[in-house]
Amino acid sequence: MTPILLPALSRVLASVDALRNLRALYALLAGFCFAGLLLAMAQSALVREQGLLSALWMGLALAVAFFGVNATGLMLMDQARGLPVRDPQDALSDALRSAHRVLLALLACLALAALAAAALAGMLWATRAPLIGAPLLAVVLPLGVLVLGGIAFVLAVLVGPLAGPAVWAGQRSSGVLAFLRGRLRHGLPETALLMATVYLLTALATAGVSFVVVSGSRLVAGLAILGAGVELPAAQLLAGVMGLGPRGFGATGMPLHGGSLGLAALIGGGVVFAIALVLPTLVWLRGCCAVYLALTEEE
Image 1: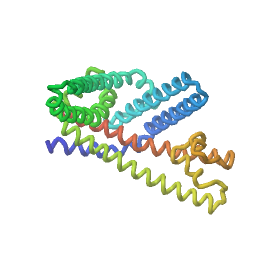
Image 2: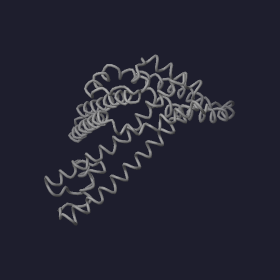
Image 3: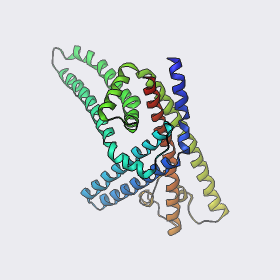
Image 4: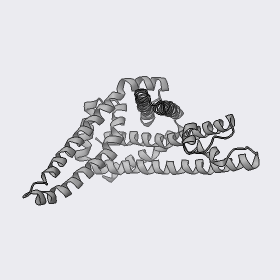
């Protein structure tokens, strides 16, 4: 196992080079920003009590985010395979033709998980019977914990992270399900170890980006207010960095000061927040691609 895992771990650790893939960064950032704009429109429609229009904007936001992630995944898969990275326009076009395979594979896995949960629910319902209830509960309770916990573990380390890379590498939905079934039966511990490395890298990237954003925003706020004399409250200068837009800031009960200057501060901070969200996501997607390639080369 060790001779196989060491090159795989090395490939996974190299996933930090996703930060150099400017095309993927642009695609993911554009997708998240567009999705955020649609979410704001959905929120505005909901405030005006236009439920149907709000649901429409919400659905469009989810679709934009979904196809944006798949387009980014295609470019990161190119990078992981050592191929020329396709243009964002070509990646989006390919994602529109193939992303439904990811959705179908995920829905099939979730349907199987729902069947298992329904079976356990039926067994728990049967424990209300007078004679067999207590003995049955003594069996069903540990069984349910193990089964549902195992399902959650498999979804977190196998299905969720690797269904997308399988499609980005050219697999159809049936091929994705066959790959997942094979890893579940014969390679789950190795897969879990590699995915744990990806999650660790993502956590480290998140911690690094968070440190830069938090420390930088505090220093800039102090420099703007104390050094440059910008007449804006520190909370408003930092609100955009924390993901609050004009409507979200207003919902906190604090007035928006500074007119156009205050609005510009929220927008600029929002750009920083979007970049801070995108960078760890790039590392995670690139790591999932590396895990898939390592596992398929092993086979």
